[in-house]
Amino acid sequence: MDMEISHETTHKQHQTNQDTSNIGQPHESLYLVLPYLPLFELLAMGQVCKSFMDALNNDILPWLNIVVEDKVPRSRVSDEILMKILRRRWVGLELHIPHCMGLTPEGIIKAVTTLNQHNVTLKTLKINGISNITKEHLQTLHSLLNTYDTSSIDLEICPKCDEPRMVYDCPLETCDRKWTTGGCRGCKFCVLRCEECGKCVGFDDDDNEAACEDMLCEDCWIKLPKCDFCNKPYCNKHAYKQCVIPGSSHFICEASYMTIDEI
Ligand SMILES: [Zn+2]
Ligand SMILES: [Zn+2]
Ligand SMILES: [Zn+2]
Ligand SMILES: [Zn+2]
Ligand SMILES: [Zn+2]
Image (cartoon, rainbow, N blue to C red; front, top):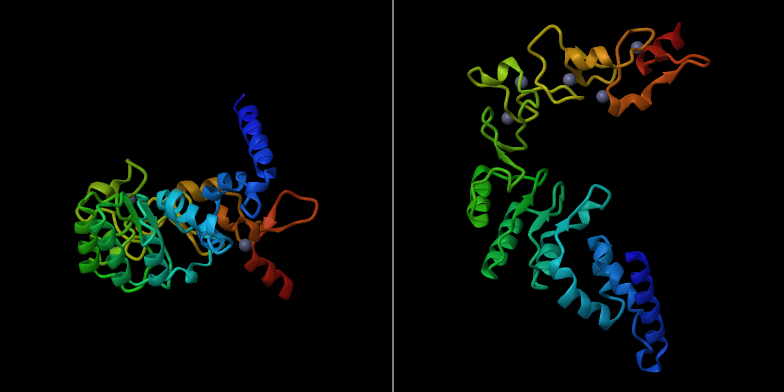
Protein backbone atom coordinates (compact mmCIF):
# COMPACT_ATOMS: atom_id res chain seq x y z
CA MET A 1 0.00 0.00 0.00
CA ASP A 2 2.69 2.41 1.04
CA MET A 3 4.60 1.57 -2.06
CA GLU A 4 1.64 2.50 -4.27
CA ILE A 5 1.15 5.84 -2.56
CA SER A 6 4.77 6.79 -2.99
CA HIS A 7 4.69 5.69 -6.61
CA GLU A 8 1.70 7.96 -7.24
CA THR A 9 3.41 10.88 -5.55
CA THR A 10 6.45 10.41 -7.74
CA HIS A 11 4.23 10.23 -10.81
CA LYS A 12 2.50 13.48 -9.84
CA GLN A 13 5.81 15.15 -9.21
CA HIS A 14 6.97 13.95 -12.61
CA GLN A 15 3.94 15.59 -14.21
CA THR A 16 4.54 18.81 -12.29
CA ASN A 17 8.05 18.78 -13.58
CA GLN A 18 6.79 18.81 -17.16
CA ASP A 19 5.33 22.23 -16.37
CA THR A 20 7.33 24.85 -18.23
CA SER A 21 7.67 26.97 -15.07
CA ASN A 22 9.93 24.27 -13.64
CA ILE A 23 12.42 24.15 -16.46
CA GLY A 24 15.93 24.26 -15.08
CA GLN A 25 14.87 22.84 -11.69
CA PRO A 26 16.04 19.37 -10.69
CA HIS A 27 13.42 16.63 -10.70
CA GLU A 28 11.66 16.83 -7.34
CA SER A 29 11.97 13.14 -6.61
CA LEU A 30 15.71 13.67 -6.48
CA TYR A 31 15.18 15.42 -3.16
CA LEU A 32 13.82 12.17 -1.77
CA VAL A 33 17.15 10.55 -2.55
CA LEU A 34 19.36 13.20 -0.98
CA PRO A 35 19.10 12.04 2.65
CA TYR A 36 20.40 8.59 1.62
CA LEU A 37 23.54 9.82 -0.08
CA PRO A 38 26.91 9.67 1.66
CA LEU A 39 28.20 12.95 3.04
CA PHE A 40 30.71 13.69 0.29
CA GLU A 41 28.26 13.01 -2.49
CA LEU A 42 25.83 15.36 -0.73
CA LEU A 43 28.41 18.11 -0.57
CA ALA A 44 29.23 17.54 -4.26
CA MET A 45 25.52 17.69 -5.14
CA GLY A 46 25.44 21.13 -3.53
CA GLN A 47 27.65 22.35 -6.39
CA VAL A 48 25.18 21.16 -9.04
CA CYS A 49 22.64 23.97 -8.85
CA LYS A 50 21.26 26.60 -6.53
CA SER A 51 18.13 24.69 -5.57
CA PHE A 52 20.21 21.70 -4.45
CA MET A 53 22.46 24.03 -2.52
CA ASP A 54 19.42 25.56 -0.79
CA ALA A 55 17.97 22.15 0.00
CA LEU A 56 21.25 21.09 1.53
CA ASN A 57 21.70 24.24 3.50
CA ASN A 58 18.17 24.55 4.80
CA ASP A 59 16.38 21.24 4.63
CA ILE A 60 18.48 18.16 4.58
CA LEU A 61 22.08 18.40 5.63
CA PRO A 62 21.44 20.09 8.97
CA TRP A 63 19.32 17.15 10.12
CA LEU A 64 21.60 14.31 9.17
CA ASN A 65 23.95 12.57 11.52
CA ILE A 66 27.51 12.62 10.30
CA VAL A 67 28.70 9.05 10.13
CA VAL A 68 31.91 8.46 8.20
CA GLU A 69 31.91 4.79 7.28
CA ASP A 70 34.76 2.47 6.39
CA LYS A 71 34.33 2.76 2.64
CA VAL A 72 34.73 6.56 2.59
CA PRO A 73 38.29 7.78 1.95
CA ARG A 74 38.81 9.13 5.44
CA SER A 75 41.72 11.35 4.50
CA ARG A 76 39.17 13.61 2.81
CA VAL A 77 37.67 14.62 6.16
CA SER A 78 39.63 17.57 7.49
CA ASP A 79 39.08 20.12 10.27
CA GLU A 80 38.13 22.55 7.52
CA ILE A 81 35.47 20.28 5.98
CA LEU A 82 34.03 19.56 9.41
CA MET A 83 33.64 23.28 10.12
CA LYS A 84 32.15 23.77 6.66
CA ILE A 85 29.39 21.31 7.51
CA LEU A 86 28.78 22.82 10.93
CA ARG A 87 28.46 26.28 9.43
CA ARG A 88 25.35 24.99 7.66
CA ARG A 89 23.60 25.20 11.01
CA TRP A 90 24.04 21.51 11.56
CA VAL A 91 21.85 20.03 14.31
CA GLY A 92 22.52 16.29 13.93
CA LEU A 93 23.15 14.38 17.12
CA GLU A 94 25.76 11.87 16.04
CA LEU A 95 29.25 12.77 14.90
CA HIS A 96 31.06 9.56 13.93
CA ILE A 97 34.45 10.36 12.43
CA PRO A 98 36.77 7.49 13.44
CA HIS A 99 40.16 7.09 11.75
CA CYS A 100 39.80 10.39 9.88
CA MET A 101 43.49 11.16 9.71
CA GLY A 102 42.90 14.69 8.43
CA LEU A 103 41.24 15.70 11.71
CA THR A 104 43.04 16.94 14.80
CA PRO A 105 41.85 16.80 18.43
CA GLU A 106 41.91 20.61 18.46
CA GLY A 107 39.74 20.74 15.32
CA ILE A 108 37.21 18.36 16.86
CA ILE A 109 37.10 20.36 20.12
CA LYS A 110 36.57 23.54 18.10
CA ALA A 111 33.74 21.88 16.15
CA VAL A 112 31.97 20.60 19.27
CA THR A 113 32.42 24.01 20.98
CA THR A 114 30.81 25.67 17.93
CA LEU A 115 27.88 23.27 18.18
CA ASN A 116 27.46 24.07 21.87
CA GLN A 117 27.41 27.77 21.09
CA HIS A 118 24.41 27.02 18.87
CA ASN A 119 22.77 24.99 21.65
CA VAL A 120 23.38 21.66 19.95
CA THR A 121 24.62 18.91 22.24
CA LEU A 122 25.92 15.77 20.58
CA LYS A 123 24.57 12.43 21.75
CA THR A 124 27.44 10.34 20.45
CA LEU A 125 30.94 11.14 19.27
CA LYS A 126 33.20 8.51 17.69
CA ILE A 127 36.82 9.55 17.39
CA ASN A 128 38.80 6.31 17.67
CA GLY A 129 41.92 6.45 15.49
CA ILE A 130 42.29 10.26 15.51
CA SER A 131 45.99 10.96 16.16
CA ASN A 132 47.38 12.49 19.33
CA ILE A 133 44.27 12.52 21.49
CA THR A 134 45.29 13.03 25.11
CA LYS A 135 43.49 12.53 28.42
CA GLU A 136 42.99 16.28 28.59
CA HIS A 137 41.34 16.38 25.13
CA LEU A 138 39.00 13.59 26.21
CA GLN A 139 38.09 15.42 29.43
CA THR A 140 37.35 18.60 27.48
CA LEU A 141 35.13 16.69 25.05
CA HIS A 142 33.24 15.04 27.92
CA SER A 143 32.58 18.40 29.52
CA LEU A 144 31.45 19.81 26.14
CA LEU A 145 29.05 16.90 25.70
CA ASN A 146 27.96 17.66 29.22
CA THR A 147 28.03 14.02 30.20
CA TYR A 148 30.40 11.56 31.77
CA ASP A 149 28.33 8.69 30.43
CA THR A 150 31.10 6.50 29.01
CA SER A 151 28.97 5.36 26.07
CA SER A 152 28.66 8.85 24.55
CA ILE A 153 32.29 8.92 23.39
CA ASP A 154 33.89 5.76 22.00
CA LEU A 155 37.22 6.37 23.75
CA GLU A 156 37.83 6.02 27.50
CA ILE A 157 40.85 6.05 29.72
CA CYS A 158 42.17 2.47 29.81
CA PRO A 159 42.37 1.37 33.47
CA LYS A 160 45.66 -0.42 32.72
CA CYS A 161 47.77 1.98 30.65
CA ASP A 162 45.93 5.22 31.52
CA GLU A 163 45.72 6.22 27.83
CA PRO A 164 42.59 7.28 25.88
CA ARG A 165 41.70 4.12 23.96
CA MET A 166 38.79 1.85 23.03
CA VAL A 167 38.33 -0.15 26.23
CA TYR A 168 36.79 -3.63 26.15
CA ASP A 169 35.15 -5.87 28.72
CA CYS A 170 35.02 -9.63 28.59
CA PRO A 171 31.73 -10.52 26.90
CA LEU A 172 31.47 -13.64 29.07
CA GLU A 173 30.04 -13.08 32.53
CA THR A 174 31.69 -16.33 33.56
CA CYS A 175 35.25 -15.14 32.94
CA ASP A 176 37.16 -15.92 36.17
CA ARG A 177 39.48 -12.95 35.76
CA LYS A 178 36.67 -10.44 35.44
CA TRP A 179 36.22 -10.06 39.18
CA THR A 180 39.83 -10.39 40.30
CA THR A 181 41.97 -7.38 41.20
CA GLY A 182 42.87 -5.56 38.01
CA GLY A 183 40.30 -7.60 36.10
CA CYS A 184 40.47 -8.12 32.37
CA ARG A 185 38.99 -4.80 31.29
CA GLY A 186 41.38 -2.85 29.08
CA CYS A 187 42.42 -1.66 25.64
CA LYS A 188 43.65 -4.06 22.97
CA PHE A 189 47.27 -3.28 23.80
CA CYS A 190 46.83 -4.20 27.46
CA VAL A 191 44.58 -7.27 27.24
CA LEU A 192 44.83 -9.88 24.48
CA ARG A 193 41.39 -11.05 23.34
CA CYS A 194 40.03 -14.06 21.50
CA GLU A 195 39.50 -13.00 17.89
CA GLU A 196 36.17 -14.83 17.79
CA CYS A 197 34.38 -14.10 21.07
CA GLY A 198 36.37 -11.26 22.64
CA LYS A 199 37.16 -13.15 25.86
CA CYS A 200 40.51 -12.26 27.44
CA VAL A 201 43.24 -14.73 26.47
CA GLY A 202 46.93 -15.32 26.97
CA PHE A 203 46.72 -16.21 30.67
CA ASP A 204 46.32 -19.97 30.24
CA ASP A 205 48.20 -22.58 28.31
CA ASP A 206 44.81 -23.56 26.92
CA ASP A 207 44.66 -20.42 24.79
CA ASN A 208 45.95 -20.98 21.32
CA GLU A 209 47.29 -19.11 18.38
CA ALA A 210 45.35 -19.49 15.14
CA ALA A 211 46.95 -20.15 11.75
CA CYS A 212 46.52 -16.42 11.07
CA GLU A 213 48.43 -15.60 14.29
CA ASP A 214 45.30 -14.19 15.99
CA MET A 215 44.62 -15.52 19.48
CA LEU A 216 41.72 -17.84 20.21
CA CYS A 217 40.24 -19.01 23.51
CA GLU A 218 40.06 -22.75 24.04
CA ASP A 219 36.31 -22.94 23.33
CA CYS A 220 36.52 -21.10 20.02
CA TRP A 221 39.68 -23.01 19.02
CA ILE A 222 37.89 -26.34 19.50
CA LYS A 223 34.90 -25.30 17.36
CA LEU A 224 36.82 -24.10 14.28
CA PRO A 225 37.95 -26.43 11.44
CA LYS A 226 41.72 -27.18 11.55
CA CYS A 227 44.51 -27.32 9.01
CA ASP A 228 45.13 -30.93 7.95
CA PHE A 229 48.85 -30.45 8.31
CA CYS A 230 49.51 -28.37 11.47
CA ASN A 231 46.08 -28.67 13.14
CA LYS A 232 45.70 -24.90 13.58
CA PRO A 233 42.33 -23.27 12.74
CA TYR A 234 41.80 -19.93 11.02
CA CYS A 235 39.56 -17.38 12.73
CA ASN A 236 36.41 -16.66 10.72
CA LYS A 237 37.78 -13.33 9.53
CA HIS A 238 40.75 -15.08 7.90
CA ALA A 239 38.95 -18.26 6.81
CA TYR A 240 39.41 -17.15 3.18
CA LYS A 241 43.11 -18.01 3.53
CA GLN A 242 42.32 -21.74 3.71
CA CYS A 243 43.99 -23.62 0.84
CA VAL A 244 41.33 -26.12 -0.15
CA ILE A 245 42.43 -29.69 -0.85
CA PRO A 246 40.81 -30.76 -4.15
CA GLY A 247 38.09 -33.36 -3.73
CA SER A 248 37.96 -33.01 0.05
CA SER A 249 36.25 -30.80 2.62
CA HIS A 250 39.59 -30.37 4.44
CA PHE A 251 42.08 -27.56 4.04
CA ILE A 252 45.68 -26.68 4.80
CA CYS A 253 46.83 -23.28 6.03
CA GLU A 254 49.05 -20.95 3.99
CA ALA A 255 52.14 -21.61 6.13
CA SER A 256 51.77 -25.38 5.80
CA TYR A 257 51.11 -25.05 2.08
CA MET A 258 54.46 -23.24 1.68
CA THR A 259 56.26 -25.95 3.70
CA ILE A 260 54.76 -28.76 1.65
CA ASP A 261 55.60 -26.90 -1.54
CA GLU A 262 59.26 -26.69 -0.54
CA ILE A 263 59.54 -30.42 0.21
ZN1 LIG B 1 45.55 0.00 27.85
ZN1 LIG C 1 36.73 -17.26 22.08
ZN1 LIG D 1 38.19 -11.89 30.97
ZN1 LIG E 1 48.72 -25.54 8.84
ZN1 LIG F 1 42.55 -14.36 12.16
